[in-house]
Length: 349
Ligand code: AMP
Ligand code: MG
Image (cartoon, rainbow, N blue to C red; front, side):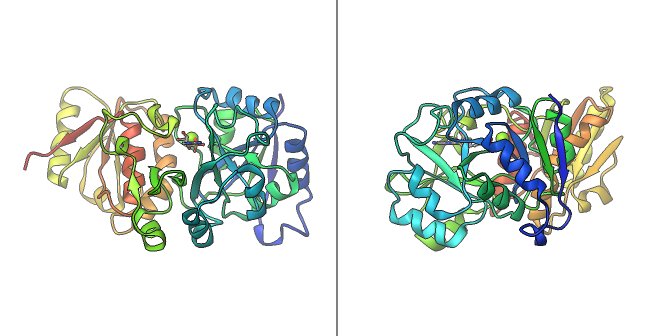
């Protein structure tokens, strides 16, 4: 299949220019699969009401069929067509955070969506992305759009169109290139079907932000205890992994340097994922900079690009800085530990 590529340079003038967004939307209506930018990462969209279309997402990504997809909508009215009940907590969260990086799990309507979207569950995950290109394509397609991240399953999520091209060229109908995404980590997934809303996956909206709007929020036990089965089916899979193994190093810069030295002495080519601050003090064969310790949003923004960049380097092992697990650091550490298959080296106190 030849993958069409459209470039959008000025998202401010979408409604008057860019007729090719209608071409992308028309392909979606024809049950083809098209990648487009959202504020978090690039999504791989397909008509969420069509079995044929949704199956193409799973095929293109190589995604396990028991991992349900997030449905993307461009206006709140559409929500009522796909869910059967909207609790008060969900209304409040929608009011505060949509459009934005927050996905709500709600009870689904029986007939509207393809059952492949929800992997047979009674609930559906829905969000409204905060990106003019995504919103325009979804509204022009006139259908709810199922859209997981536009990468091959297991690989880091794409934050640039070139990442999508690398993974999916020839496997999908089109890619809309809208430049780099901003947030860099995926949406926070919150289950609103339980009495107390529960975070199933940390992401762009923090627990503190959610609690400021609806009071107490729980966190799925599986996020803090490896022995527990996650409530979100996708959380059990390996994710975000570059070719070389990743180890997260927890400790000060001197400890990190010792760990690097030890691996180098054992003959390994070590790549280091370090912040701007870490890069000024650490010495290694290859260091790639990932944001700044002073603002973890910059680490979130750069993380997947840096993990992918190591695939272009001749390294046997990637050692990564670790980050405080609060605010957006929660999502950053969740993704890094997944990329590392939970391999951590910690400094003894
Ligand atoms: P992705 O589309 O790759 O960003 O991943 C979507 C995430 O949302 C995965 O972790 C899914 O398991 C999760 N998810 C989607 N639908 C549901 C649902 N109905 N209940 C719980 N988790 C869900
Ligand atoms: Mg994904």
